[in-house]
Length: 258
Image 1 (tube, rainbow, N blue to C red):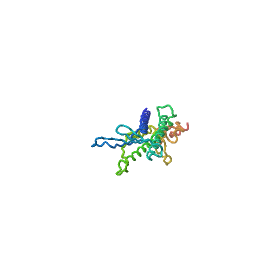
Image 2: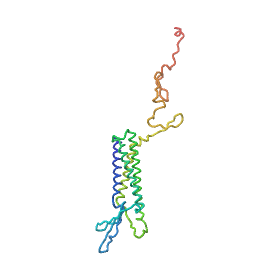
Image 3: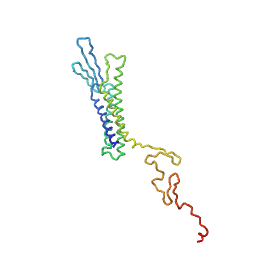
Image 4: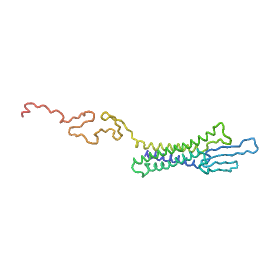
């Protein structure tokens, strides 16, 4: 029951994280800057420049927005292309991760036997982690590009200093939820897939044995010692000794003659 609840909670957490990441793909204001709005003049004009992965836009104080779409691939900046590719790879891995985890969860009646379902859950957790790393790398690349211009001492003429927008922070929260969900999946199956092993001495040489064979000797399960001559304890002599093994009493000459 505990394993089932943890897997359901991990499924909800990881799915919510991928939903956040997916929403950022279509959101505006990945980077934004404001110009104008300075006091001291009779007419105060304000304008906002903002961008996302698909277009650059300009919004004036009258709420009129003019956008320039990225028409062809080679007209896009190299870092935007890299961010797109990393995001697409992460979302593709997320599809396989969600399918594997859903099929392998204990609360579903598909996926085969329990060891097979645990392996599917572990594979889904790996897909979740790799896809989350891909999306996290995309966000970090975009942040690095924006921060490079924001903290530069000398900017070329006509280049603006942008700030980070809400989609970046939403995506980072989504990546954290994805990693947390993957950890919850792994916790439920790591003990089954990778059981603990210990070293025992067999004929003076170290040998690794799984937990299923702990406490069993080499001959356990093949035969049982006969109880005709009494019982014994492995490693030490039992207090119960067979009567046949005891020396017979010495007879006198008179008894022997009779």
